[in-house]
Length: 448
Image (cartoon, rainbow, N blue to C red; front, side, top):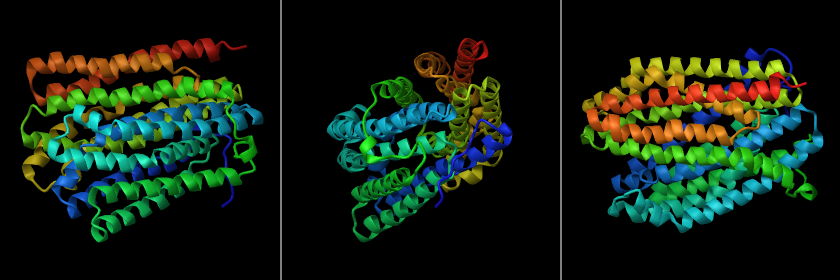
């Protein structure tokens, strides 16, 4: 397969950002579908206890994987910046440093997750009858953390240089293998929880191998070379400066969501089940919208490096418009045709009705989250990560906890709980936009 890259500093931004984002959307949606397949296989063929064990690890796993996604954001921004500036040495130093940092980060998460699995799951109030299976799942699944970190690294590099199709091909192949192995390990080998986790680990190493192999075969500046593998202190500092705050933000989001789940759990079992089924829509919608946030970072990074300040601003605005639009459209479809979607997860009419409470309210608001998330991506593309992270932690994490303890505690209705999303997105989005404008004017608009 011929190596591809795109110059994101020329041509129509509307057209390029759209076609750049489509493979990213498909990648994110495939990941969501494969994760759903994991749950479906273990639930259908291994029983309710195995399903509960895997399901009870969702928050735990998401905290760690979201941290890696945040770290890869720093890699994407820095690679795009040097690539746009035609700084071949900067690109090479960034890529080789990033690979080593990602591998080390994956190993640290492997050790931390495996070592503290039982204690953390107990803190998350995992039911005693599910605890042993959940711990086993985590300890096997986390063997794939180094591979997941390396794949995210490769995906970030390819996205930074304008190539989004190649990671999609690799993810598709690994996903098919994952589903096939799930069926083999669970049905044939009777491995239930361990089987699903083992299938995930193998598929993660396949995708990591393929993407790293492609980078080693590349003759471009972002290609890998064994004798160049070393950590540049400056590049490592820049990657961590942008990536670590983003990773921490993602992890804290999951912790804040635990408080929301506590609020949901105060209602009937039917409402809890309906909320759980409807929450699957979040991954679908956010996955599509996230493609435009990645595009925003890549396009702004390359154009910032090329010193094309007008395209820096327009890259943000076009990405924001696309992400807002697709959020509104998908939200409208879910709000009006949500029963069909919920039917994928339950056949009980009462649970579907309960799930529609969430889809109806969230469907109206999904698009507005773009003002927060796309602006955060834009600020990070300008090299600013700490302040946007503090703002989003205060506006969307701390605020949500306060809302649950005050507004929801007073009204005790499901609408009063779900309304916290639009209010937190609105407050945080406004603050993020004010900060971005300030940074843009200082760093780009008035640049000599």
